[in-house]
Length: 328
Image (tube, rainbow, N blue to C red; front, side):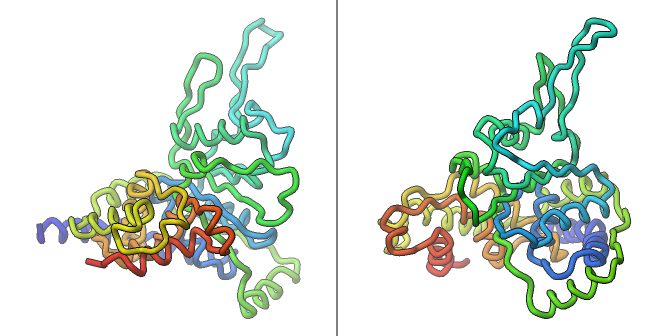
């Protein structure tokens, strides 16, 4: 097994080189937001999607557009509105008067990276159409199914303010996102740098430094990253502690309505592998699991009315789980 880990480590080091170059290229445009940039890279490598919560003006659109420029892939920003239809997203059949036949007009979802801005402003049918494309990586128009391009990443945003006229995402649909991220304001130094950059009329853009094939090759290496049996048991214990806290001596049973789903176990493992890959390691440690734990679990633990009354959030529950579950 020791020799296997050494071989995996060699593969990771061989394919890891572009990560630092990508970060450097993105920093030409984006000031700060290291947390968001790292999570975008991890989701891209792990073939997952991101649900992002943050107030307007925090460079959410600019971040994903810059990442697309650096990887040389197609990008589409979709503004979700109450009058949006599924056909506006996935495409439809269009009648051609020239030959009397129907032809397929593909929608904007046929891009490598999608920014679904304010996803909770669109009705349930549109949300479902996007989430089905995310899950199946394909779209059916008429009687034909079309695969979506690879890599394919959706970053959906929710505005934590102005909740009037919104259609909240059901928990079962939110569960399909690998990460739910909360983006905060920049620091004072970062905001000063933003001021210096953005008020002199200069334009900033990233150069294409890698190809989509490099991402797909890195994914195949990421899948090989070694996970020890004890770390696997730790991941399962963390997820089970959200469902059956009494078994782990956690006095939070009355605060949890529903624990994390089996998808949480899968995503927690894959996200930990992506975190290890970013660090240049061919194996994952409990620290990798802890680093991504809140992002994977915060939208999968549903708190009870008692928790809401006591102002206990799902993040508080997840933090208690990680503090109490024994680390191997």
